Length: 336
Image 1: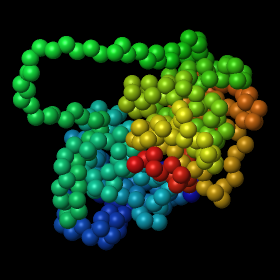
Image 2: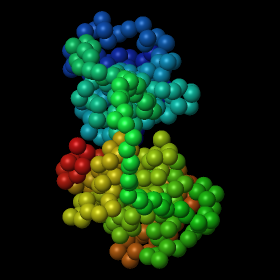
Image 3: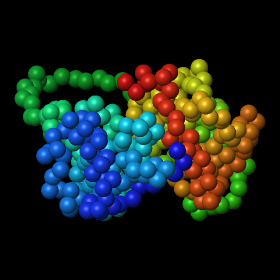
């Protein structure tokens, strides 16, 4: 699978939409046909995902921000297509100014939508005989019932002094998307430049051959910068692609710990075992930043803060390997 396309299509005349939903919802999940087809289809925005020019998935978006009818055909599951489809729909909705986004998720699919940043906003309910829960993006605050409190009277409180945690701040001058000069990297400056790159990333940070970058990525400063972006930028997503999972991958300040703490914002996959690993290790920041170690064992390389053409080329290769990758069994407990 090399060619993935997602397009906006009309309801009338696009038989692939109805065919996919018929197979997934009516035939596979036994949803009554009279419930599957409703009046909202005529006014909804519909999306069709093609994999190698074959219809593989669909979704719809209503004018009030409701996302629904998300379906991937059985033969195309396990390749990350559902995630790509949802991210496309969410980006379209965001561009239209729709917020919040709401969906009715089957209970078994809650972890999938949580990885995309959705949070549960209702109790469980039945729909078409299948348990569901409403989910929203971005997260909404939950109203808690008032509590009665009776004061026990005056008393002294003595709290020990708490040391404030100093967050990493970069003083480097380069600007992501602006400065295209090549900066050579080695062990003396690589951490500072990676931190500087992370703190400017708005949407996507992708790490390839991450096991060869542990000397760099598992520094407390780097983890701190990733935590800052996750906390301050609601769209930030970290994708980590490994060829092998090293024994020390979960130790100390680690990407695995980030996966455990932020499962909706951090994704880690292992490259398909039948695919050979590229020799390079690299980091891609949004659509313009590139940190490259051509020979990772030397711990030397370069960084460009503005190299759109190079990033586009490596993004294509990364996505190809990402789509065929799987969640490493050794890390599944971190997602519980």
